[in-house]
Length: 482
Ligand SMILES: [Zn+2]
Image (tube, rainbow, N blue to C red; front, side):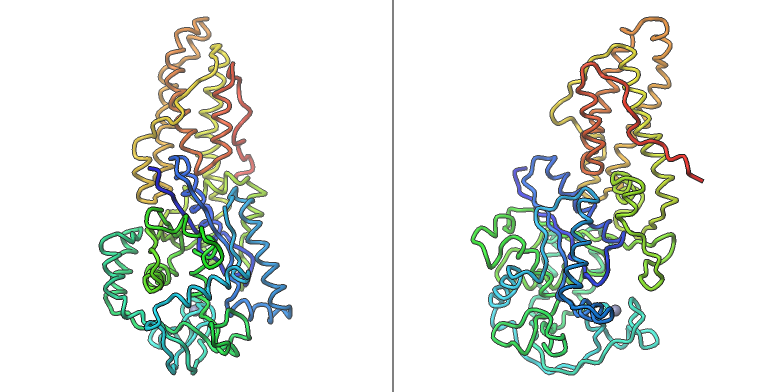
């Protein structure tokens, strides 16, 4: 249990402002970090921005602004999203920082010399994917995800001997030493690896990258492939290449968890472990893969101009409502829909009527019955199914375990009808009930902390007051619901 824990999000491209899809990832990673802290672990949470991508260069030039200015501006929006969602990362890495560049250079030099070679290569590159794509995967000559034709690249690059690591990567995944959740993704990754791993190009002509990116050590005519550069953020943010104590959170005893979307598992579950093996460094422990978000039933698209700004959403509904919606109403692994109408419905049903109403009922009862403060265990037992859901990275399942108890207590209050005893001036007869209900509420509030930390703290403070007084509504009902 003393095991340290390191949780990361991926680092998004900064070719646009953040949308709700990245808010989901941030909130999942933050909840994980808070859960492990609640268990008493020493946890480090990291996020950041991927700024060396070619698509940032292209997006800046489309707008006629300097690339650095453009990435600075968008990186700020990503940084500001953290406090807006109640996320406080221990480290925020920008890949244009000198410390990151140092780390990437050192990492490159650490790769086994035999694993890097030069080769002339022709391929189709999709800038949207920042990856080579195969002719057979194109539809009408365009990338399926980006709707644009890839560009033909014909140049000599450095290659990484990924093929050498096929059986080692397969063993890591099969043995769950590198655990991939959910199981369906694990199967997908294993099938991909078993198909045979090809060596990968790990550099680009600097000229083609517009001079943007990190030069290959000893060969400034090439820049390091942006995905290799980006993956190294997981150790550069810890001080790899710049500080001696960098491995405090990157060692075999630390539980290292990468949270990501379903489009990037190839890089995290296959390329990254192979690169680490080549560099003689420990591999991550968990790759947790979430689905994609649609928005009001539509694909989130900058060209449709329909993107919901997560910060606006927080301003309208409060950060805890947005956190709760993302973690409860969006399936932990599958695709889900973000709609403000649905958010209002979930808010009213679960937060205003469910949790909020229970708190208000109980504090009113306590006050009427002259019940003094409730002193609960420092770490109360969790509801049935709660830790099990966490062990499967099912955020929605852990919340369901808490809400099941809310329903149980609300039903018990209805059945016990304590109001009658209070009317009959017999408050003593309800104290036994209250003691039990407050105990359950205490446990719910305590284990809610990873999801809605402020509400959790407010309830715990209410319970500790002597005497307990009726609370202001924790989650006022949204009355403009249609
Ligand atoms: Zn693409």
